[in-house]
Image (tube, rainbow, N blue to C red; front, side, top):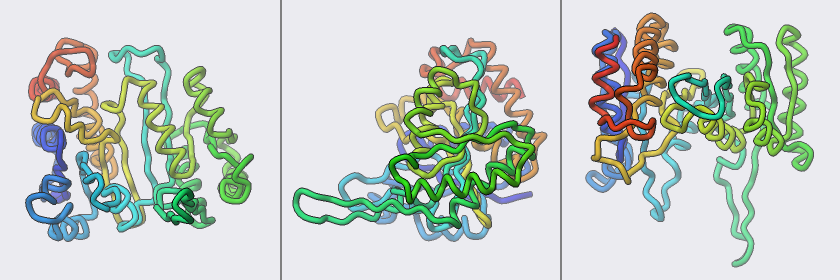
Length: 331
């Protein structure tokens, strides 16, 4: 029995966490849970966004299921997501976007996985006030970080039967920083002659994604572009409520929904737990519990296909708990 750490977050975080844990238990996932409240509500109550015991738990279990966290605005805090990624060197942010025939969008053939470098680029948050009218932000790209995320993308493609890896960059303007990322990509691509490779400028990619998304398979990109592009891909499949993610490094792994804490609907019991649930499935697969993950995915697909019990973001009227129970009934 594997113990994992769970951060319940705030906003809709506690609601969707409870939903996901109930599905995992009903599916007999061989897991035990070390659960902590984190985020703005925890800060207001106890003076810490994440309690020390939460960090200690993650360092013991090395696997974290995290629901959305609200970072206090105007109080000098950096994003907790960025903090966790940097503290535990979770360098690879992997976000799969796949069409589901039960969710109606203009696109029916999307199957894109974004590999986003997770620890550098503009997200290092290095800024300098030059004068009262000028601020500089530092973009950091290193060969080491570029090599590991690019190689991970190609290895994933080879291991999972994917056929193409596309490098997304702005090397036509950022000739040194993005130029380094692109040059590393081109060198590593030569080692994977069985995998098709190409590169595209980020603005062109955004256009191509909404015109011909079927031409993309795996995308690998620096931090900022990856954040933007993966949100765009979620729009192609029906929204952020359907986009899971994993953040992995050498020693630790964190699994989370991409969407935010949505405080405007917190407590209304209409939040869609699918993204966090599919993130939990990615976690199960990471833990080699593929059979349980497949059973949960099939149950979710059945509920989506039936279309009778859906949360409002999917065009239905069901409460979170009703949608969750429908998934459990289909296990």
